Image (cartoon, rainbow, N blue to C red; front, top):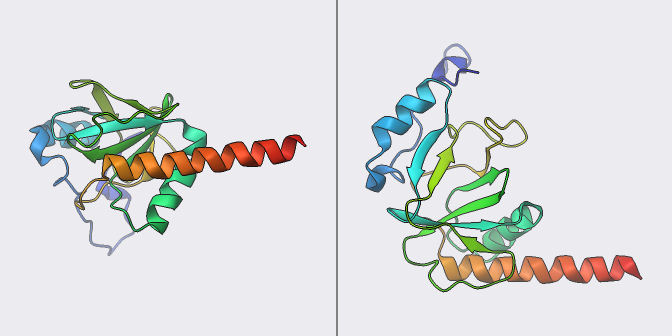
Length: 162
């Protein structure tokens, strides 16, 4: 599948994907080239921002809680291994909640074009929250929203069990 701006309806101005969030990685040309060929872009975590992985079943509720709290929310990517939240560099240090992990510095994050959203992923990846040039999430805000979502899911499971 080739991802290109040519899929826009006739007469519609095509906007280039936001890349400001990628600028500090130094990988914008390579990522845009990959996207132009319908491939996933590769960007290392821990260089421009950190990446925190959560269990996919709790991702949407975590996003909902962050939005309700009006916390900054950067890109969130659905992957085969979970939901990857982009957070401000250094803000993931020391985050310790069961089920949450911080990708190590230099771990490659495979990024689909920003137009690729769930439920139509490319390479088993799709955006839950599409990239923009807004500030990324703050690690402690993500930790708190995830802990609340996790506790709510546990309470719901206990209630359903009887």
